[in-house]
Image 1: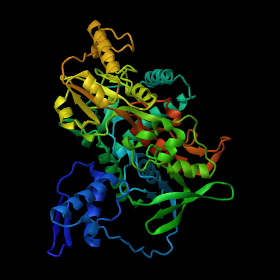
Image 2: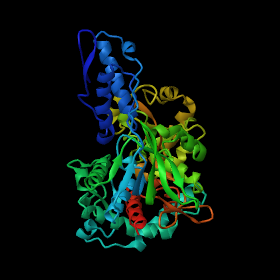
Image 3: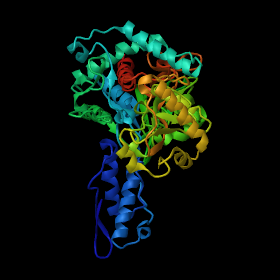
Image 4: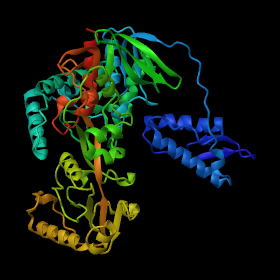
Length: 553
């Protein structure tokens, strides 16, 4: 951060000289916050929607620069009053109104235009387009695409469906409750629709799909601009959504950032005819001749909805990888006009993570397969070698949500851990007993658990939880480490009920005319309790594309 002052203390320039933030999410804050600090001579400016962490980091860095320059940051916290622009009557009429600018909404808007809509408006409440797709790796699992044809992979929907069923049955077995989903007819429809959507994006010049380096030779594919010499950018989804937004702008879509859908408008028959939207200058109505598309994502970032529907995960919403705008807005609006929520929602499970960003990737459950994980009683409580879904369930079902991953001096990436030792998230000690004290658990209990685990490692048999022998690594050589791990979610499974044409329906099954929903706003039919890799972005693109087709029929 570089801040320039005049002799009298006025701020003349603020520049972010270096950052490691996700590009399209951070850019609005990097552009807006410094400019407003200079304009208003204040660090009490508003944070940028969707880039709160970046905004706060900039403000904190500027405050530090003020201190370094011999000033008092408090004297620069004068209240900022912005004048509301006089905009007049902004009532509008379009063919299609899309609420939400993530992967689903962008695809729906593109598809509507591509299928004959003369006017499409897309409103996005955040300061950037992309939603959860923008913070993903843009990985899509699909068959019968140009890419799979190029490698000679023949589509086999029956085999894919059998895999889906086996995975779903395993998920149900973990929780012991059958939610009545997936709806396999809808899953089969998706298999066809996702391949079509991938090829369509390629035909439009938005993405050339290539092999996903981590899973070569199969149905997993990514846009070529995601791939680097080091592999594939795990947060490269913003490149895909940037290309989609650019296509829309080039093809005449009315694109409005920082504009939220707040209420659906209906006629005397209960059909949706438009929506009220709101920006910094106030509210106005937009009427949609063909219909309204709800593409506002799930509710993983809504404290209120998580506490209502998934309280066992509510303590970790700050750690979700879902887009910051995923607060259930579309679901709320649909319910207000007669829509109904699916029963038994769940989270998209990504296993474990850390509150220390420097080791969050290290703490992913797949990186802990060979480690020992204990609860606040110092005892193992699940098979650490299981997949992210099982890890998520296990941690969420502990009494207090506390889980620690243990290791010794042979811990992979031990240098990374040494740099993160803080006595809170990462504990380091010369003995197991000292480690237990730092963790706040009973030293005798932890010592007994470690002894038991080492015996099982030596025998090559995990009699307690059945972990594969290849993942049984003893804890022997000090110093010892304990890393606090937390549940990580990637979104929600649930939303408002829709039919196979993505039309929102009432409790009696009747269609709410003119109202469509896709992506995480309505994805319950796809899963039991865990999503299938490559289907998050895939379903966003497939449902969005198909909605655009359907709405223009």
